[in-house]
Length: 379
Image (cartoon, rainbow, N blue to C red; front, side):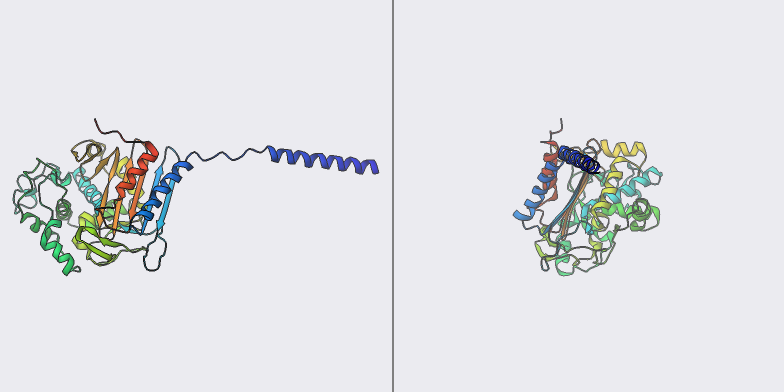
């Protein structure tokens, strides 16, 4: 009996030793090769909060090839309460709206209801030089029409009557009251009124509101439940933080709900969340909204060179191989880009609008270099 117990003890001890040996031989988990990249991107984002006056930012980087899915928030959404900014907050995407509006226009081109070589005079013959301005020129900012953003009447109204409700035709009339910046089709000038006029044409052709068309053609098919076009009023739908300053007009403070949205309409009044904007920009570039031929044209033709690494096309910007747009509106700055070659999406927004010194595109550039090194200028 004692021998039996001794045998059982020895066997139990042996099993225990084997278990301990196995545990000690267990391999350490393989380090994530993406973690050093993520750490560098986090440091770049944190440096914006540390070294600038930006209260808060959200950055989303999804590199499908590398397996990176990084959604990060830094800073505060409210300067008074110091509540942290949240990655699920809605925000104003400003001029990124133009990609929504012009996608609807291009769908109407696919449907044969509009042609890119149509003259503006077909829809609004009352405007000067309308026989010389094509729909294409409106989409890629080569029409030469002056921007109402630079008109003293609009700037003064923003300061003195910020809740004024504007009609789109007022902006067109204001812009056309100035001489053309250049002969249509011979130059490039970023002018918000181009997209305002496109919104007017969409409504004229479809007989429905631009908001309805964007909803039915983009928002609903993508199942975006926290996105939309605000046509008037001051509210920012959804749960959101505060937005500060409007550097272009030297305005400071909390401007989240200080202006009527009619003043940027088709050119800048969409709101969304980072994840929902990711859905949109990826389909916008990968395809699905347009016919293959028109999609190819949008991504490869009709671009005007802005710099060695950036050009502007049919309602879309191309920056070091990434397609998308950026935006400035009171309280918010944003950038959204997707590269089909790298299969990577980058979305950034700040709750501060001081474009002279702070632009999300600058952080995009840092992220690009972290992931891919220095960009090569176009040949």
